[in-house]
Image (cartoon, rainbow, N blue to C red; front, side):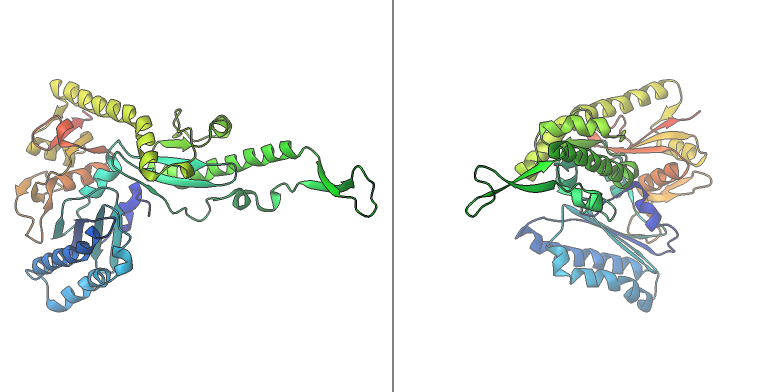
Length: 383
């Protein structure tokens, strides 16, 4: 699985219109996944129809070329997850696989539609699991519904040999014979000197330190996700003692991931994450209620839009799976409702969230049942 991090939008920055965004739910297994490329082609057709309202045929053919190539890539469709996000513009084509189904969408606009990916990044049920043994590691990312193994990036040691290399302690062995001397028929016996077990313990500690540094640098810091340790009980104390990862959860999973299925690993991880998830949701709702009562918050779309453009919004709550097609004037805050079929129209909630993030605010996309408003938006002001 490719890692989706908070800086994913940097790969989309600077794109010139038209900006094409395609979202589609996919299937992990046969035979359900057979329908996925067909549905993908149908969504690409919608993009084409939208482009035809404004752009010439030659430009349309060129920008849709990578979409058609992806539709023909059967190896790709045989290794999908639960959802798919595809972005394209002149000289740009980015594909993200997601661990949750997404609402189907094919939109051409002046900017990319990123709210569904932001939802994945800004929901509070995401986590990572570090599967650790004395000699190797595995890394997973999951949420309430799914967990998948991450393909480790270069620079992250997969084994103790990767981490220590030539510095890995070699047991020092001598050959002696017992009970019969060194004559014919005697059996040579090997024994070690120099505290072999102590040397192994030192190597294990050095390996754990190297793993801790690499996971913090390449995964925990870029994502900000809680890290749950899954290992045999005897390894937990040592790893927690040497770790400097502030994202490492106090509670862990007392079993090796190699000994359980992915579904059982997800269930055990969720037992650790669930209490934190509920606490975070409750805190967000309570803070908004207090701010709203003091005039420092609002769920009125027009008021929120004006506050967002003025840089007054510290925290913005957006309802997941909710769309409000329209245009936002990023200088005045004026909004105009419209239809997504218009090539110049995107989701207002998406635009508001992007603007808040650009102005240093925090954006949380939360389930509808926990949303403290009926409008799809709730803002907490700085002043």
